[in-house]
Amino acid sequence: MSYFKLNAKYLSDFIAPHEIEAAGVQAMLAADTLEKKCGLGNDFLGWTTLPADYDKSEFSRIKAAAEKVRKNSDILIVIGIGGSYLGARAVIDLLKSPFYNNLKKDTPDIYYVGNNINPTYLNEVLSICEGKDIAVNVISKSGTTTEPALAFRIFRKLIIDKYGKEGAKDRIFCTTDKAKGTLKQLADTEGYETFVVPDDVGGRYSVLTAVGLFPIAVAGCDIDALMAGAAEAMNDLKADYADNDCYKYAAIRNILYRKGKSVDLLVSYDPAFTMMAEWFKQLFGESEGKDNKGLYPSSATFSTDLHSLGQFIQDGSRIMFETVVDIKKPKCDLFLEDDAENLDGLNFLTNQNMSVVNRKAFEGTILAHTEGGVPNIVLELDDVSEKSVGYMIYFFEKACAVSGYMLGVNPFNQPGVESYKKNMFALLGKPGYEDQKAALEAKLG
Image (cartoon, rainbow, N blue to C red; front, side, top):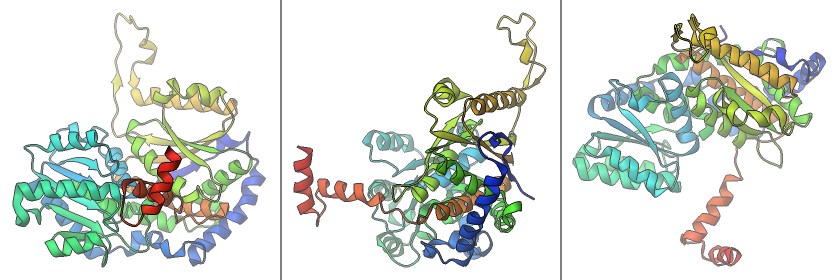
């Protein structure tokens, strides 16, 4: 069954049925390129079959290691940046709660470091760790990416100082290259357990590898069900265009792009979806934003952001469309009771569940925005469960790849990411960058 479905009825004023049908030819060509692995970036397509052919032995080790951390640690520190942490955080926030660390539970709190270079942020996490038993999961293909490598240096010392070099072996877990790289060498030398970042899976497509699965398992999520949902998507989304919502979503995005839209605003009505939107933004932004092309992926949480961004969406530049993730069944509900005095005048909302009010906010907003000239694509998620979320993740990954091929770019590289790194290394005085340093400092004045 499909846990994630396309509802295109709110697009009727913006896209004619024959346009969607015509775009199907291009979508199927792109999908065929993906299936035959003959397009740009075809050495990074391991994610396409991952839900079926993942390493079952490593999967068992992930679950065992997660159980160990749950028993011996109060806190898990996840060290990574970009695709090395966004997927895990997105899934944990959505399946558990954005308040995960504040809830009463029998699993460790999880904090994410190595995703910035701010000293205040790192000091605050260090202070939270005082007096607590901690474990570390460092995620880096090479082990030399500046932000996570710097954080790992600090937390590795903290663990060794607290537990000794032998004790550290039970508390440091490295997700890295299977055979090479600085982090892999260190892990082998020190005896840290390692999990693999597959060679043929890029960071932003890696949430269903050990990169995401280990922290997700530590949080107590059912990773078997997560993979089962992704496997169902893998099978369902091989269908022809007429029966494939994933391909249609990719096609519709490209149609709207060609009609002049430049921003894809991902919207949800659940604050727990906020980090999933951050994952979506990296997935599509890093995949499509190249060669001076691509939609800018943005996000909003309603009704919250209707009181800040709502004016622009309704009445500003007609540069955007919305991708609305409509969660059909919330994790829990709240019954609204009558108030005898009705001082706030809200009794018209009572004697029903709060989800009904949220639903009417969705319906009222989508009518207002489409009437205001903003196309709305609705993607309906059955519920917030491991199977549904696994299905949605694979749906977005495949839609992104197909959309990228339709756009005529390589959806699996990120050449532009290196520019800032080279400048930063030069300005910091990294050996080998001496010539660039002087030139950059001159430009800065």
